Image 1 (cartoon, rainbow, N blue to C red):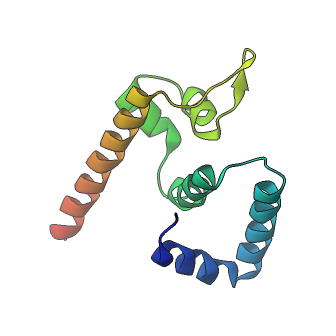
Image 2 (cartoon, rainbow, N blue to C red; image 1 turned 180 degrees about the vertical axis):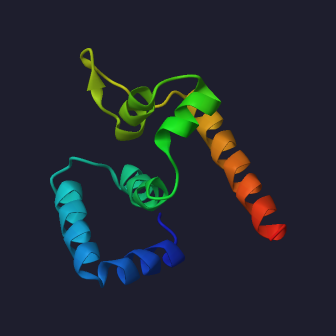
Image 3 (cartoon, one colour; image 1 turned 60 degrees about the horizontal axis):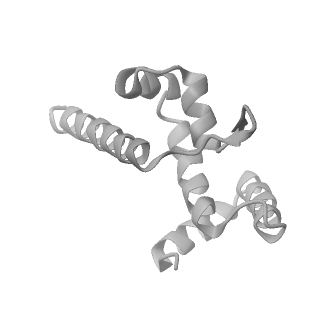
Length: 112
């Protein structure tokens, strides 16, 4: 179950015109079975982060792969006839990468 704080945050974002449009589109995708509720939470979080972080940087630094490879993984695209979601190990590596970046940003902030 999605926690209450996250639900409140989603509701607040939806109050803007763009947020309302995104919420309507996302709700339609959920209702049509195009996306699961677990993936929906990840999608909502990822959209904000993608505005701040460069996917190509993460792909190259932490995976040694291309931007398109990571985008396919993030979007769970179909490539060569199969879904390109993350394996368990790749998910762990992505989590570690984001933790590293978060720590680096926090250290930079602390030293201002």
